[in-house]
Length: 175
Image (cartoon, rainbow, N blue to C red; front, side, top):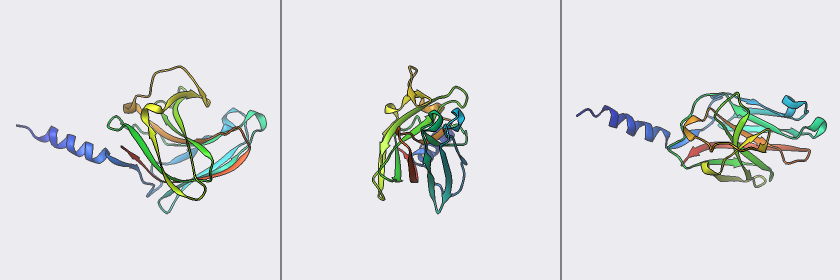
């Protein structure tokens, strides 16, 4: 009996159960994706410091703007073993959205919003089934998220108001 497939399956499920992103280094790299892609003037900064992802900036409404976001560099991630993602975050009391993308070219992302508590670390649970297809922040008709096709993670703020923001992320886990 060949035990290699069983051992590989056990290793894969163990390796992918639990923490997906810990921010112990700058890998994967993250980059800003703000409303400047549409003529807006919002700005954000993302960096990893002390094992925490820091997403800060200012949303501005001029030139039909209104959002700031960040994304991880594209790399295929299979989340099909999970029903939800858990994020440990410290925010500023504002609402943010978790985004998952299955393509870097079609503009569709899958997102759901979550609230933060000012200055407190909390765990936010986002069921994968709750992520809805959007394009430019608006819901669109489309297929449900295929968790085995994820190519990037993202975080966005766009609350229809000009505001400074600061979000820290300690880790993202699958469950």
